[in-house]
Length: 368
View 1 (cartoon, rainbow, N blue to C red):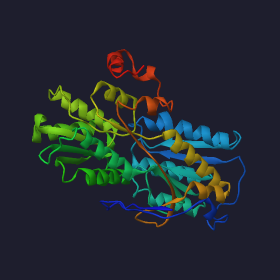
View 2: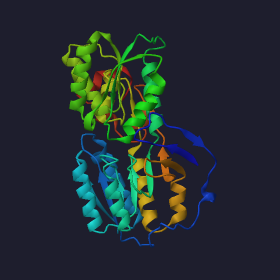
View 3: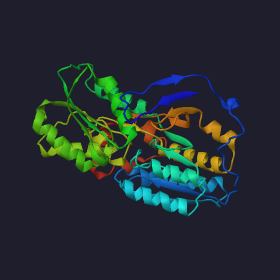
View 4: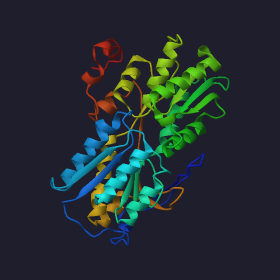
């Protein structure tokens, strides 16, 4: 089993590897719900819409998979909190009151939602934490390998210097929301790559991951450091990278420094093609969403061997130890591997990326 300790207060993440396989899975579970048939309702709570992935990929792929696993009899009760933790708590309470069979939860605020998770548990409704590790008595967790995400971002930023990196090079760090445990992992892992090699001149925890907040933070950094003195920008995701580019352009910067990202959003891929963003982290949202749907259906139908096979990793949250988990791998996306990643996986088509505005840039990297 792979075991990952995740703490809201942690600045590092340790990973210990030991052997585990499907043959070690048990076919019983004291916590398992009574077996149900295909006529089930799966609650899906997603956190926001500023990041286009949730509406464009996570929800539709999750819904499609639930339906295919249940012979079109299963339903998905979907709600998006639009970055409002109180709204998400109300949405979850409604699902508990409606007696859905299982809840898949991507928390706006991983700590604040713990009481709602407990209420679901008290009502006999399993809760699977999705993408962000919610606190409280959750049954399982699925996300990408967040430590690897931060490491990939940090290494890529150093690679952008072409081997000519110095401790005198000033970096701005635009981290994600302080209420998101993933953001803390990205930040800690990226810092493990960057510390001692460059100077972190400014660092921000960006409220709600919003691009406009990142833009404001970047403007502050430019005023404090000077646009010409910023060698690179660590951006935890693509939406914020877009805000960072706006701030730099508004400051009159024409030759943009390397900027990282995450999520492989279409606008970010186009910025990478055009040379405005150095890289993103490609994460297969269809794979994550479909695997989460499999976990949810297996859990509520009492198919414990399949559930155990899907959750062979283990993680700890601040409130719970030894949580069954699945950690999905990630890939660094640059202009050199667009065809081998987002195109090959049919995430986007070339025509989506190479619109009229980007045709010349696409031709320059032979993307056609």
